[in-house]
Amino acid sequence: MLGFLLSRLGSLMLSLIVASVVIFAVVQVIPGDPATFMMGLNATPESVAHLREALGLNGPLPLRYLHWVAGMLHGDLGMSYTYRVPVAGLVAERLQVSVPLTIYALLLSTLLALPAGIFAAARRGRAGDLAVMGVTQFGIAVPNFWFAMLLVLFVALRLHWLPAGGFAGWQAGPWAVFKSLTLPAISLALPQAAILARVMRSALIETLGQDFIRTARAKGLSRGQATRRHGVRNALIPVLTILGLQFSFLLAGGIIIENVFYLPGLGRLIFQGITQRDLIVVQSVVMLLVAAVIVVNFAVEVAYALIDPRLRRPA
Image (cartoon, rainbow, N blue to C red; front, side, top):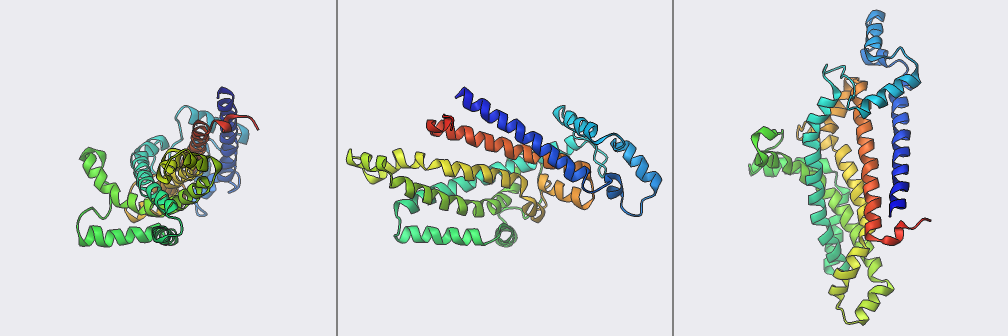
């Protein structure tokens, strides 16, 4: 297990280095002069030169890259050109919204999808299976922002059960935060639950056709017992893959939902950074999100090894 972890840690570090180089090149090299891009075409040469000096753009590219990486390792993500505050403070503030929203949506997605997938697999080809597959097909086809607008229309505006948007803030208490995040979390979770349920069904159907399941049945276990004791656990590996991808998507890809519900999260921060040409914010936040994706994938691989010890062996 130690060798497996070390090899995966090496892959993790290499992936982070490659990602940082690519992000740095895309943000600071491909656009040409970042200072000119940030200030626009009508900026005076003096103001551009002042911004270049303030951002440290006069040094060589390798030195600028190393300075940026070293700053991130020490928690210094730079100074926002638009907000005139440290980017680390902006990120910390927005994480208080995005991380709870992501976890909430992922929990809802898992709680809906796994029982639905198991139910459908156990009734393959019957009415229950067809009903679950029909609902999940609808969930995949419909965009999450459409779900969001329907929830705002019926649950918030007509029934007045939950707020239509905004974030109450943690100072208002956990219950107020829970109410603020419920509709956005449902909007994010429903399409992801549809995908996860279909993956769970397919993986479990394939697992139930394996020899060890037939052996368990021959030893006297009922179909339900064989499914619960042996089938579900062995069907979780592809499900974990989707869960890891969904966590990354929900954390980094909730920009539309955050704008629909006026949530001050990371997705909205990136959108604002792009529209306001704040490359410092975009560069740092994108790197953090990419790092989160890579770390989550590493955690998923470790979970693979815990579920199936055969995966710890070298290829």
